[in-house]
Image (cartoon, rainbow over all chains, first blue to last red; front, side):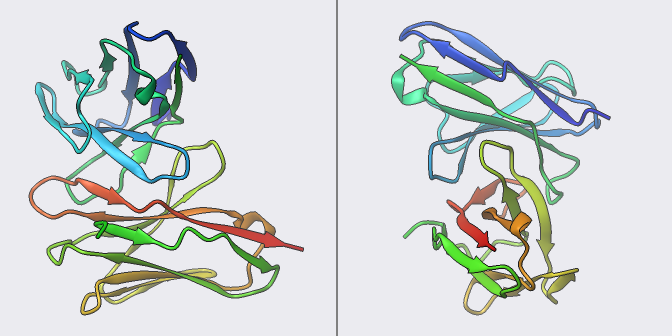
Length: 112
Length: 111
């Protein structure tokens, strides 16, 4: 049982480039989330989804987009990378609105 | 005031010590509370949920004080392997499980 998987593990982008961070879960969870964590800080919610076809903004959505075409996948898109988006990105999933969130191993992104 | 606040530490304690962390939250409508453990450069992992009646899991005890709006984590008989950052997470309330995380408290257990 893989749980939540994320790819890539690490990426360097130039300013203005685009990329998609992949997230897949095999637990049949309806709820999925994207967070970013800056050094020494807590996690901030970027976007979340309560089921296939439904997404909503979190605390810090600017500069990002998401889609949820299947229950398993929840990719995060950066269209025009900026240095302020240098961070560690974690994807998470949960089975219900009050249930534990399980995290993927993270993607470290450096924008230069 | 931040929605969820933690003392960043670090708490430097010897092996065998008892250490406690608090986490305060501002939203009185919050219903779910969690402690996560995060090792350096790793993802957060659930340590324990925090129930109204308090709960214990081996050396770890979590408590909720709704009147003063804080949760606590007590670690007894600290081990070197307990060294990590401990994040509290509080559900914002409402229909969806939108967790607000504290910045974490760093614990360093030394021989």
